[in-house]
Image 1 (tube, rainbow, N blue to C red):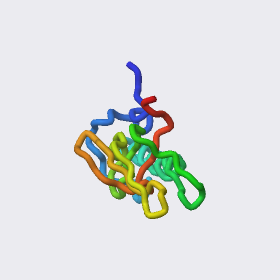
Image 2: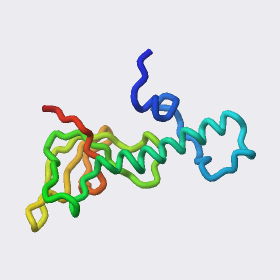
Image 3: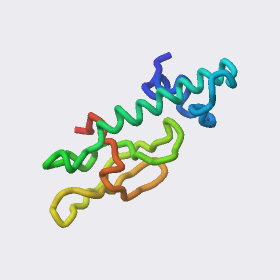
Image 4: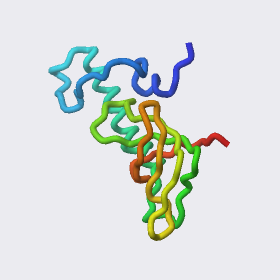
Length: 128
């Protein structure tokens, strides 16, 4: 069986029910399986804070962004458990008064949403 990157990151199927957060619970209060869940949650937290944030554009640091129609993105949503950030495709881009793209229209499996580009993680591949 081939494991998807998501399966590798969370150690279980992507469709599994999210566990309650154990990151703040002391190890001596946890059973063995809960310690494994805690490790997975810590890895997800580090991965999402460190790696995914590098995929986000920092407009103050760059003169131009590279957001394009049809790009695949992850919508960064606060307070969602691991692997529940929606995957989507950019349908439209909207420029601000300075002619820089600030907002996009994104299609996900649950609908179409308008989001600021600061809440997107552009995946390093496109449909082209």
